[in-house]
Length: 588
Ligand code: ATP
Image 1 (tube, rainbow, N blue to C red):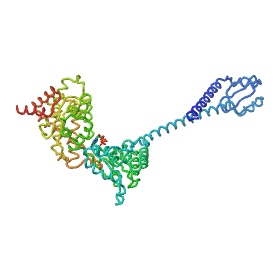
Image 2: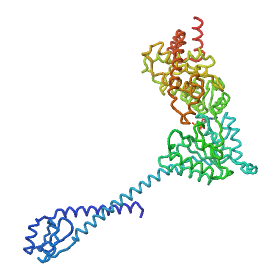
Image 3: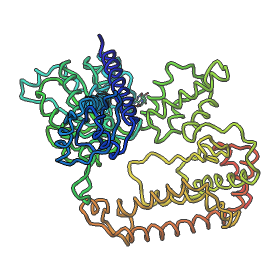
């Protein structure tokens, strides 16, 4: 008989018993009552056959004529003697009542037991389910990875660094002979979408070993200890396979630096999980051929404990691709797509500064979808342009009928302001596109501003970028008045604040605040200077804003010209923008 059936049968028996007991109690309560006086009279008259005495406040009386009654129990000690003298049989315990009570108690006990057992079972099941979610290590375990270096374009330095790792995994003995040990933990760090996961897969693919992937956030669980057990489970399973690559994405979810200002340092579950990871890493032999690769967007936020020698001590940067890298990535991701002959991928690479590999891949994919939707034979420049816009700002909003003329004008001046100021103060920057076509992501329009690739940013570049960001709001204020400035500058203000804050508190670019790095101060428990920084940021932004307004006011005619062209044509490319500016400059 299966367990389910047994549980059902036991439940039925218990329910029946409980029901029987209830019915009996009801019956008992319904027994006829006689007063104590009547009862005494009946004793005197010899009518009573038997009395059931118990400690309860009632006694049950059985008559010679077969009737049964209940009456009050005075609980007098001499009472029993009196009864016996009168020739009445006395039972100390009402066996019927006793039996009923016992049965009742049993039933209640059984019900309680059943409920507790059942609840415990389901609680255990729930716990098991929760921990299974993790300790089953839904690790994406792949025995054979097809990805190789061929699938990674650019990233040449990173490839060089991991080649050694691959050789280590393949030929541990070669290194053991020299007493060298395999790096146990490697961290790939760099901005999102630069191909860290891809590179980790390629390591496994090139070394022909299984690949286990999990994300750091998967280990941080509600129940303390589950994360640690999942780590142990992951490593146990990996070890069973022998040589392999274990990939932990978003390692910062697990190994973020603890804030020294916070007493006690925080999260038990995270600490336990991290300790388990470090213990497991030191547990496998130096030349077992197991490599743990972790990825993060920011190396500087990781706990020192994680980066110590023998742990994740090898750090490989996977940065944003440079122009050559972008060109290679574009070539790779268009190799399986029909691209029109007149498309120059190098030109697209030039226009996509700061695009990650993932963004470039996404752009080419969007372009292919646009071409397919149009049923066009090949992917044309217009498909790539639209895809470019989609990747940057989201899909174009198709229904623009609800946008008022007033909003269109505000957007035209706002975007025109960004574009014009760029052309006037940062001639090295390119403005490849200005549009007032809104996107589904909520952007009213867009001005694509590309600064030249630089190794370092100068103070002047950063100040210019602040002015470019503030120019949208400045144009709105100049044209429509302070009362009519809009929420459209939300992202711009965020950007401008971020730049000025970094200049002041990280890059020592403000002479009043000086060279201190306030992040370092804070990490060492020294705070309180933030008010000074906020004041300075505000002062600097105000100055930048006033200058921006002045430049735009001085060039108001050109601003009007660009806004008008945008209202008429919705989108301007760089040549059209340059032509408008030239035309007005020549007329001036
Ligand atoms: P995240 O930090 O967001 O986890 P990531 O750095 O791990 O991102 P991946 O997930 O490896 O980035 O990259 C996403 C996709 O971007 C890849 O699957 C690939 O299509 C494309 N890609 C990124 N970099 C490259 C590259 N160098 N060569 C070819 N494709 C790339």
